[in-house]
Image 1 (tube, rainbow, N blue to C red):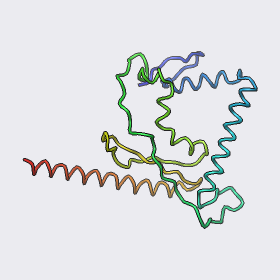
Image 2 (tube, rainbow, N blue to C red):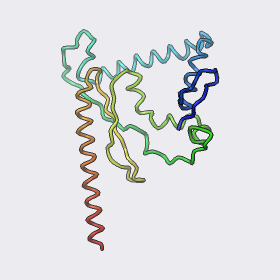
Image 3 (cartoon, helix red, strand yellow):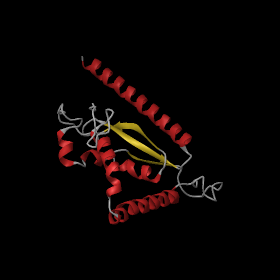
Image 4 (cartoon, rainbow, N blue to C red):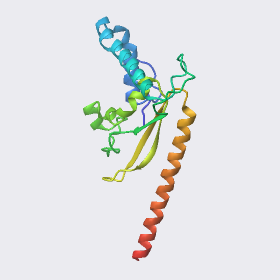
Length: 189
């Protein structure tokens, strides 16, 4: 649960979590970043975004709708990319210290909370629509596993149709598994 109050620079935090407040602190102090840091980080990030967009465009069958060849479908390519949402199932969290809005272990590492969703970052950086849906459970721990669908800009309806089918299949499979477990328990009695 997020705490309320003010951020370090005196602006109301409005109940925002520490991550959001830290990001807003960075935004407040960004005019103080020297030009060399701007050139070494911001311009590199823009180049990375451009490269990601080009890489995605080479994979999709439908060209970006704002390009000159928007009406032409390519002979090769995919409509949607399916990939894992996270690098592993959700880790167990230690008890939360009531004075903080996140677990103490996350404060120690600083990056552990971001590593889990690293697979969703490229679509966001490229400005492409993406949706995550449940897919199954991990064999080792039984925790839910999700998949993400990434599509071409303007293909949201197709992605949502696929996501809906995936979610329905996931829940139907879960219901069948639960029925099977109940039947096994009833047969064992």
